[in-house]
Length: 99
Image 1 (tube, one colour):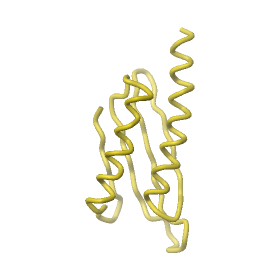
Image 2: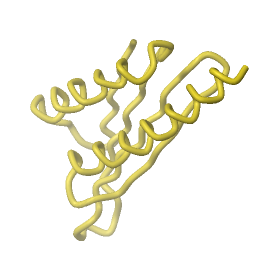
Image 3: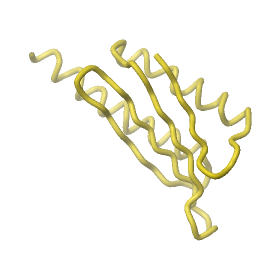
């Protein structure tokens, strides 16, 4: 599984990148067919609370899953996006089992 992290218009810290790598790496236990995961981080204007956006795109054979959350911190946004992706992966695996 290939993990790409894009920080749009800012530099993500090493600590944040390690956190994302660790959390996204756990998606393997839900589905072994994951080819690529793209994580985009962005600070949403205006500069207020709840302005950190994390978008996650998961590439699977024949489909892509996507989740996008805005929270107070990037870590929180990543965790909420991953929770949504995990839910989608469950539905994907269910569909695959019924084929």
